Image 1: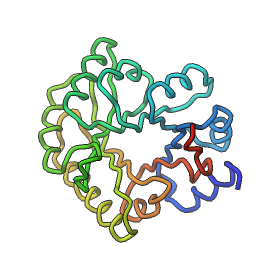
Image 2: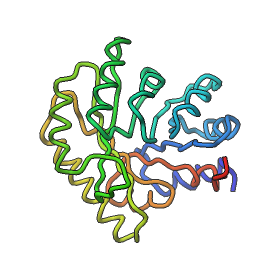
Image 3: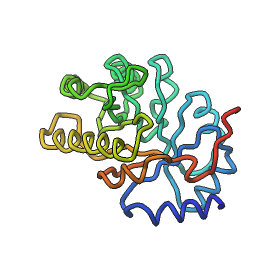
Length: 220
């Protein structure tokens, strides 16, 4: 199937208000343009260097997202260029984004990454750490938390849905608290392998690459 056909099929599987972030890691500008011409406007990159190269060369009116692990020393390359940084996994990273955003006089929108399965090899905050994180953000002036993000271990559909359901519950609980500088607008969960499970459990933003562009060349 073509990129255009894949996007059409994807839209038919998800609610109309679900935001599709096309995970464009390793994809060419030509592939990105095809997806853009098929109606997509949100694209997510995982690597800072690759994002910067595409950002500088791409002339399309794209909403860029950063969806990969982010080191504090790379923040300066992203602030002011992304509509949303999904992968906030430490207080140190928040502090650096706040510092760089203040210097530029802008607000930066972020999502807090939740390590819902408590995998030691995965990034993100544990559920019981989220209150402290959101309290910290209340003291900032240039960061706005727009929701939560999670990446699941490779599990069965039943296990996936259990984890997704738990994150959705956390999302709803936080929404009722009304923290300063935070709102639960986006729940970013679900990738090409599990977005159907995520949609069933209430996500409103998915990050999909292979479901749009086809199989990735992992040698790149």
